[in-house]
Image 1 (cartoon, rainbow, N blue to C red):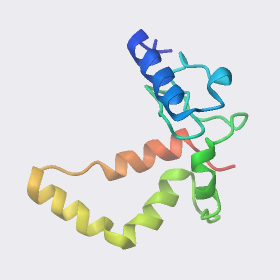
Image 2 (cartoon, rainbow, N blue to C red):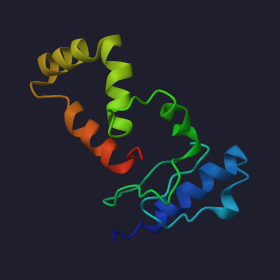
Image 3 (cartoon, one colour):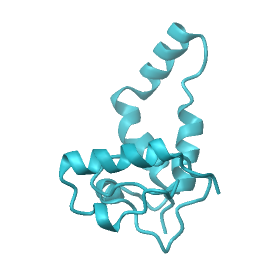
Length: 118
C-alpha cells in the first residue's frame, strides 16, 4: 500500500478543520484510499477496489439512485448521466485542443473499479 506523505495528511486535517468537519476525529487521514465523507478531500492514491464492506462516501451515495441494472459501478452512472449533456462534444473538443484523448474511458473504468455496485 502506498504511504500518504505528511504534508498531504496535514492538508487533509486543515481542510476538515477549516470546514468544521465533525467527522475529523473518526477519519483515518493516513489511509491513501480514504475520502472525507463530507467531500472536503478525496483519495490520495488508491489501487484497491472499494470493497463491499466499505460504504460509498456520503457525497457519492445519491449517485447510486441513478444506477441501472446494467451498470457496473460509478463510472457507468457518470458516463450515462454526463454523456448526453456534452460527453461526445467534450471528447471532440479536448482532442482538437490538446491533440490526445481526454481519458474518459480510463476514468470510467477506474471509477467502476473503485466504486462498484453490488
